[in-house]
Amino acid sequence: MTERLQVLVVEDDLGDVALVESAFAEHSIPSVLHHVADGAEALAFLHREEPYRDAPRPDLILLDLNMPRVDGRQVLASIKGDDDLGSIPTVVFTTSAAEEDVFSSYNARANAYVTKPLNLDDYDRVLVAIRNFFGHTAALPRRASDQEST
Image 1 (cartoon, helix red, strand yellow):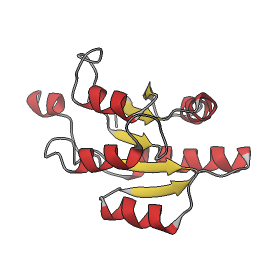
Image 2: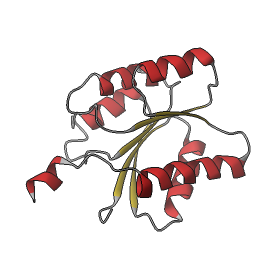
Image 3: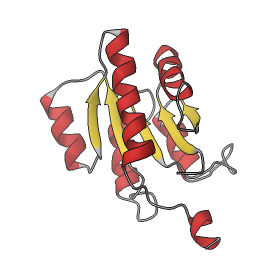
């Protein structure tokens, strides 16, 4: 991938956001992280509503489940139920290991479900694995702007 990997991080815990930023910053995969603190902001970002009119289409979404206002379950259902947004790989990245959350996330068409590790080294290792998979290994859907230039 020659362009920067555009990643939308939907997370209300600023400590977790800092850990994601650190894991994505120290690598050969050029990436740009966009952060929103809740599901309502995520939907505004994805639909390019104010104040996100110029927001890029993400190549990857890291989505927490438990957030204020609109939770991650509702955001996931909205993303995957939208013909335009549904192709964006969405990884549920959450503290919940509840079987019901795992099942309902995959049922809502999450591309992966990852429980946040408690140990900082494991946390970083998991984020690096996600970054490497979506930055190097997986073929990602092309953005509309990419298709127009070919």
